[in-house]
Amino acid sequence: MTPRDSASDREERERLAVDTMASWALDGLNPPPGFADEIREWVDGRVTIDEWIERTRRIAAAD
Image (cartoon, rainbow, N blue to C red; front, top):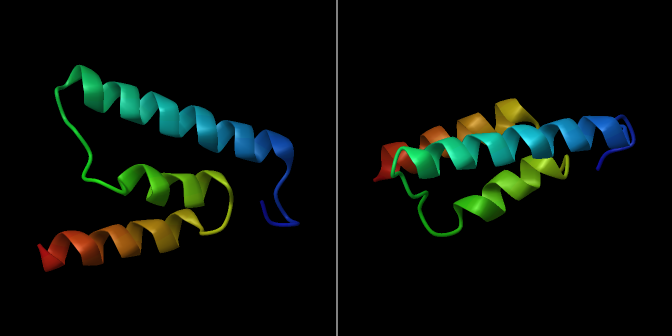
């Protein structure tokens, strides 16, 4: 968590991540190995959402 984040910011990111992964599971989708670690970096505030999206796009484009 960065100094500019509050505990409630982190809790909100965690709730959003859990909801998203639950939605994927209901749709029968499985994230690739290591993807949960990528999400955890965003939840923990180590990367911004823009950084995370850009990284994810680069990984998807490489496949």
